[in-house]
Length: 283
Image (cartoon, rainbow, N blue to C red; front, side, top):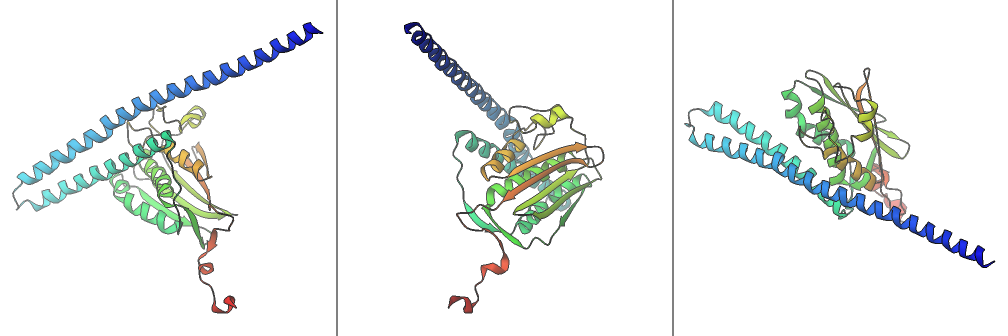
C-alpha cells in the first residue's frame, strides 16, 4: 500500500516536472523570438528608414540648387520626394504596428465606417505605385454592400493597404490587380489578387511569420521589409477576422480577408437606413 502511494507520488512529480519543462521551453522560445524581433526591428530601421531619409535629403538639396527656369525637372524631383516619403511613412506605420503587437499594447478604437469608401481611398492613394508598373487596379463590389461596418478603422486600413501594396509590388508589369468586395452572411469579404510569381506550399505556410523572409520576398511590403503580412494577420486576429491565401497559375496569388462587425451585445453590421429613426417610432 505504501509502495503504491510512493509510486503515485513519483508519477505526479514526473508529470509536474514534464509540465515545467514544457513551460520552460516555451519561455525560451519566446525569448528567442523577442531577440529576433529586436534584431529585425533594428535591421528595418537601418534599411527602410535611413535610406529613404537620405534620398529625400539628397533630392531636396538638388532642388534647392536648381535654376527656377527648370520647372520641369523640379516637378519630376518633387514626385520622387513624394514617392520616397509615402513609402517611408508606410514603413514606419508597419514597424510601429509590429512593435505594439510585440509589446501587447494594442487598443480597440471602434467607429462606424463605410468599407467601400475606405477601400476606394486606399486604392487611390496607391495608384501612383501601380501606374509606375503600368498596372490597373480593378475594384468590384458585389451584393451592393449596403452596410456600414463597426470596426477599428486604422487597423482595417493597414490590413487592406498592406495587401494591395503587396499585390502591386509583387505583381508583374502590365497586369491587373483585382479587388473584390462582397457580403458573405454577417461577414465582409475582401479578395485581393495579382498575377505574379506563384508561391509553393512551403511558402504559403510561412508568409505570415515576421521572422521569416522568402527568397522571392513575397511577404515584404518592399524588398528587404518583412513585417507587412505579419502585421496584417495579427490585426485580423485582434479584430476576430480571418485570412485565406492560395496561389495557382490560373488565378495568381489570391488573398481573402473576412471581417465581422465588432459588437457590444448589439447588431453592428447595419444598413445605412437603420442609422435614422422615423418620428413615428418614438411613440
